[in-house]
Length: 192
Image 1 (cartoon, rainbow, N blue to C red):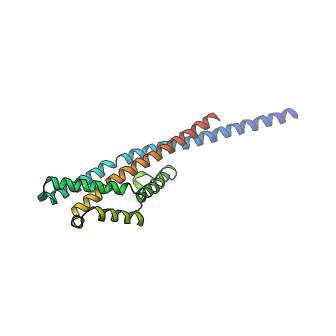
Image 2 (cartoon, rainbow, N blue to C red):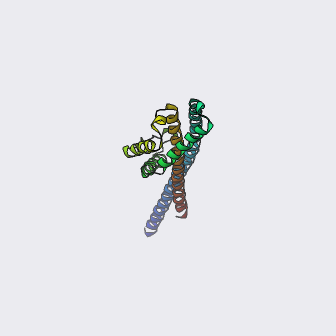
Image 3 (spheres, rainbow, N blue to C red):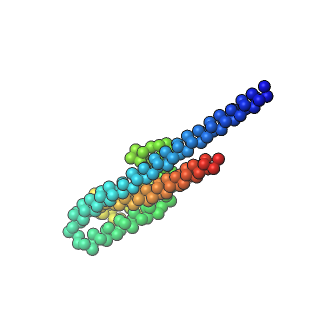
């Protein structure tokens, strides 16, 4: 009878070990699938920048055409001023807060929610950022230039391009960190 009890305990221990091993394999497979998904989404994100650059170039050409009578130096001066304005906007605390919140939100949606990059929502800037953008534009761009739809479109496209580049870089960094965390989890499973 005692032999039978030992045999039953040995079988139960074997089944428990096999079951635990199967759970480890399932967990590792799920983590590996997440890693692959994140890598695919990073590729999709990287493919978006050329589209933004093309849109920005179209806006730049339209602005050049609208200002063609002003001379090349004046046009270059406006371009430099707009570039400076965009730089000032991107350096604000309001933009940093918005970008940080957006990229945290988006990286979470991809890494834990399984949302594809092309399905990511874009959050509208909050009122503080909107007001800061208007403040910087009014302080640094003449009222006459603010009335030009081509100039404001160019400013908007440059701001979008540079903000998106900054956001994309931060998003990719956050996704890379998530990949490193998942890889560490997989490695810890293989140690057990």
